Image (cartoon, rainbow, N blue to C red; front, side):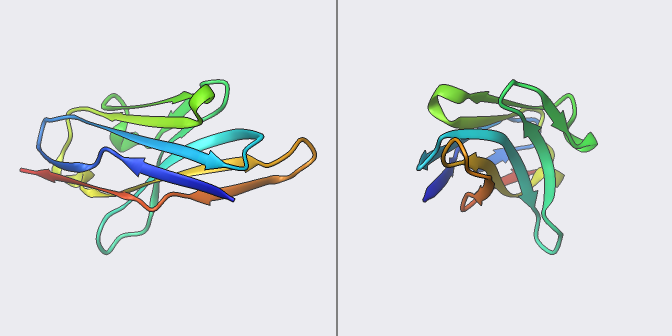
Length: 121
């Protein structure tokens, strides 16, 4: 019913930048939170950044001051601008959206397929 498609991952040297995008499409009345997660090999998936429809954001301590998450609500899109990347940022990055399908519906969450970010030292 809802598809999330991430893009923008790739290979970058330490200190470099990448911008990830996640576009939601399908049966969407409204999207509340749109969040970024990441999962490194052998580790649990961790929450990186959250964004609300109103524009409020929160970040995990390890990325504060380096990553910026922002949304374009009209396009059902969330971005993650990643600056001063470090090798420890290497992971598959996923977006998650809390979607309402109609005015009386409950919130349901959906995941994207992930995009690989690799930071070389």
